[in-house]
Image 1 (tube, rainbow, N blue to C red):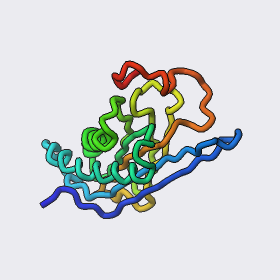
Image 2: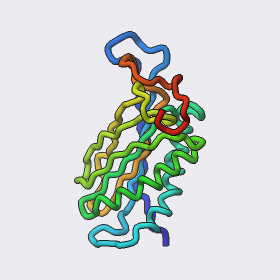
Image 3: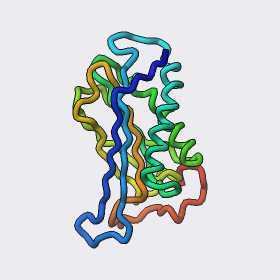
Length: 192
């Protein structure tokens, strides 16, 4: 029997035209794909979480492919991942998403080098989590530092986990604070 039992999924897309300045030539689109799953370890300590993490790779791939289809192949420039664990679980139940969600996004996006930022929490139903994003090929591209809110009104219930992936098709609208730009990335080490 599979450890992954999905109760519901969500796809949220936000389009930003301006931030008080002129309308951008190309609007910024950010999207979050989420799945609410039963927590197979809610209410008890499980010493071996690796089988759960391995099974989550398929869910990660499903969510990553949905985001790429939504934003357009080759258009994704920023990414992140998140987990909100219901109160009968523990933070480590959400940490399984680091490998499973990050691996899936890298695979679907063609193996970008930058680390995938993340946020996770153990929280009540309806909790909202701000998730950090950055450029997929180099972590220090300042224009792509951003955040996106993840959450679902009726999730996670105490025995559930909400897993989410977030992608964007560009940097912040009106970014003008200097620093490394995406055109200056040269080391291909995920940093600079």
